[in-house]
Length: 453
Length: 92
Image 1 (cartoon, helix red, strand yellow):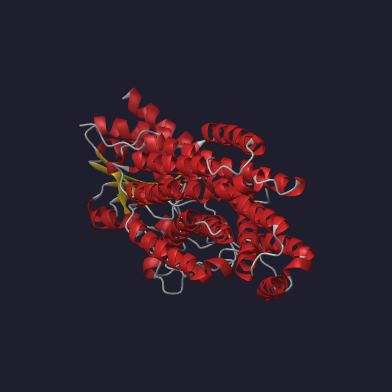
Image 2: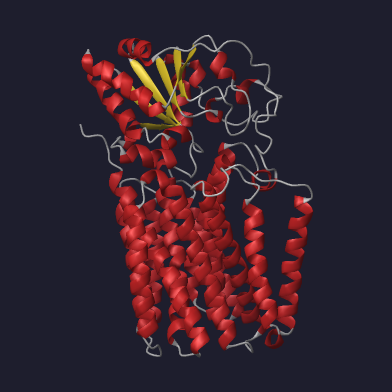
């Protein structure tokens, strides 16, 4: 059976490698799934297990997992991934608990591992469920929640977690209650960790929780002294951390700043940087003429496109533009949306070929040559204050230089500020024109104009 | 034994960094959900807990763990495949 585990671990490594290139990604996912299947079969074959509850659990879990995977809308993908992640954490927690229940007299190393499994698994679970609830807007909007003394409370919670861990390790056989307290504590820590984090920082949190679920798995591997679990968990743990770093870098902020600052909590009260004046606005009808005459158009999508479910009509408009001889590209900011790569997934769903999706660093040098930049539901990621205004809270964050295009159309419901609560000087620039209204409706009207012409 | 396990953990972590450090942003979501599915590997521990016969309560915990881990594994892989199936190059 050890051999099957080794093969499974190798397949995870190869699968992850293949997942990092567009040509091989889909096969890579299959390779990794085969590795998982081998790991499960190897465990069943070990000969000492009764199958009844295992098979029942797998059948039930597969049904639920498959049904949710096929029914979820692409726009709801961030919360779906978050929830799956939470279930993985919960499973690790239960594994640690069951192991303790059976062997409270295990060696110290195992006991420490059990405690870590339960703690990390619990934090992953409650944090992911809250992230899910925030993303699905089941709880009061996605706004960050902060209160006085939050850091002190968090510090006390962590101190309690360490203290319980020490008691548990020193006297495991008489510490069942401590373990239960540890579970509750882990849930509370997870909730407090995600509460102060707002919608636009969700990509970072999702990545980090993903990393935690891997670490919980690795900790369970230490409990069971299972090499393959450790390898798989560790791989996931690091991949989550790498993605977290990429997301933080794209916002020019540190992980600590994202996790603890409650960025955007004071939305609407942060003073703008003197971005005053009248914003011009036009109708979709007038926008049509500008688009019809443009020889190059860049779409800059943001979370607003996901909310309006506008990706399909964006693609429809892009097709009409191309038929009209216009060169069309999409500028993708790494943190646009609510999870890493969110815009890419939505546009792929609408059948946009991925070679038209251009990353921020590649599109910015071209921006001054672009006739029309069409900003759809993006705000902070195109805010020139990040480049020009040293007093702005987002100064230094890399942005898409939409303002450098000859003409900028901003599709937006109102003049309300973005997630960061900062006025956007882009809206007041001479070359910028607002098109107010629901992005999907606006684009549909433009498409209708095109078709009528 | 303990040292070996920690050794394996650390080597795998370095391997993870090497594997994933250069991923194009369009693959961030599939990579995340795909690696998320791998974290369901804890199913192996869940199966042991559910099937080793450690008493009713431990079996119940194991059974629940198997359910949740399977949702993570099956849901994670399927959702990743669904996303990757949509990515395509422009037809010339």
